[in-house]
Image (cartoon, rainbow, N blue to C red; front, side, top):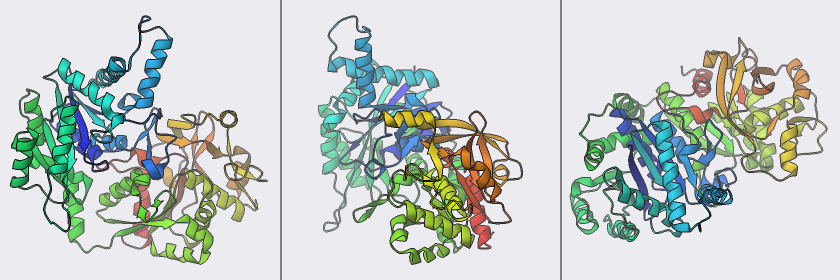
Length: 549
């Protein structure tokens, strides 16, 4: 049967459990194993689709349309594989499944209890993912931290799996070791407490990944080993790194992959991370070289939270920019630009000239919309390379309709139900869902086909006539206005052939160096070793526009 590796976090969340899980997966895959990964979120939400991105981070979408935690994006990028609904669990999903089974008399009329029925459902789903993917290894990341009430049932499931399959289960704890500035010494007590809390759940850590600003030294490893009952060789240093893609290389310096194999009674195997090492070398060399970076501005609204900038809201966009920039051996310099600032002070739009390219990503709600439209107009007029993603495409259509097609006051019905020219509107079935207030999991989600027109920027980028891309939206370009938009010069370069829905718009190359916008989210399919074609073409245009290529 498959081997199972549970990854839990101690001390605090947000310290890198997701990328640590993904990195372990990459190491095991490089050794020739078939690997998949599961994220367990302790939320009552059935999926991540209704969560605020400022609080929870990006909502990632799988090819089969599941709205899930951003960590699945990391798993896909590191494993270079597409994941599905089996790879995502939430408390809400688990309870919903158990209740549905009870209603269908699948428990034979007996009393259904939180323990053991909820943990058993978790175990059932983990095994199902292993079977469906035919994996040798299943990595299971438990969200949050040990000791949290919400995680007790998932830890209980993990404990029961270790009890049932003692030779097939390994526990990895990712714990933070702070270095208080006034003391200047790395402290192990928080990690000791985290291990103790895990022990209270009946689980002993097999391996501890020590997250810290600096590498763990021998005295710290020795102390953790003594007080946490873990062999010193299984205390792995996980310091801050310049790029997350360096993490598998760092782990393998301490032979983490083979230490996991040893714990599971398997023979050591050599890792093949040459392609990964090549990428990391490119990234490191970019820091040393004095080559001008490619400067990209992102006009968004999901990154301002008090005095802090929350980059996780657009993590897949950020990574896609990095992948394409690294492809051209350029360091990306990404700047966050507030759409609301452009509404309050249109003169500030001049700062867009400082960037090689501008991206308007996806989003929902009216806040900052007019500022984004102003930014798009500026990019069009000043011939600044522009890439619009989902909402970024819809607003590009609105801007073109208003300022080129003569449709004054054109808008999306998301922002103005009474607009005279609803160039962006919902389909009839979506209108019915909105009336019934059925929001969760009801958008156009997952992969759909797109047919590209010859002699377009998009066709040249992909090199294929038919592509498949992932969606997450409710509003579409209104086909009633297609003729007038095309007549005025807007190029419809990509169409969903099944429903005749517009997927990609662009301006001709002779009018603008790069003005492309997609209804789908290309960032979800970008990989570090295989950048997405549209992002690659966008970065190429950014460099060419400033004569850097």
